[in-house]
Length: 275
Image (tube, rainbow, N blue to C red; front, side, top):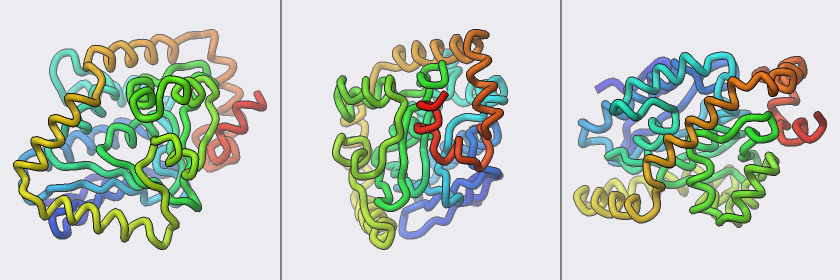
């Protein structure tokens, strides 16, 4: 089995697939990545050697900054090829990630915002770099809506009030704050992060598969939102993303370097407050 895709490179060790995401120039979520995620989920569903998948970024600055706002139609159409007739959104694809056969772990060593953060919430566990991790939901500040799971996950991870603060405030938070409010499992220094995740992933991979799969399924039954709520949120994102009232605000962000390796992307939360 080959684990190399156009935007994901995989290395299987001791039952753990280390999946590194690299989609230049800044790891935007587009139809190429969506196609690769679908392929990876298909392949790991049938390969019993993969017990755990650990997602990392090959970009030191960005895990995922957000979706490619110029390619919403393209990545949405690709996401619609993954599931059933009602599963036609990025949020539905992320739900499939949550329900995947292997255990999934996200390692945040740069910035994850918008649908990039929502990808991490959809993973079974998240660990973050104390030195470099940044996470946030900027959609409301842009004029859109987090449509790929942030509402459902953050209310369950952090509680109603902190979900309100993160989503309505559209501010970035660092790894310490993300750990404090429950958005990541643990924040660790760079020198300890990968070793910690490797030990946990290989420990889980060594346990009887039936017990791990049933435990994951029952935790999901207790902790994941109904799929209908995922569809509703995806619909609101699509409506607001096409709203002409937000076009000037988005245009200003592009003029200031949106979707480039610029201050706007590096300090997105602060930039939103300046508009």
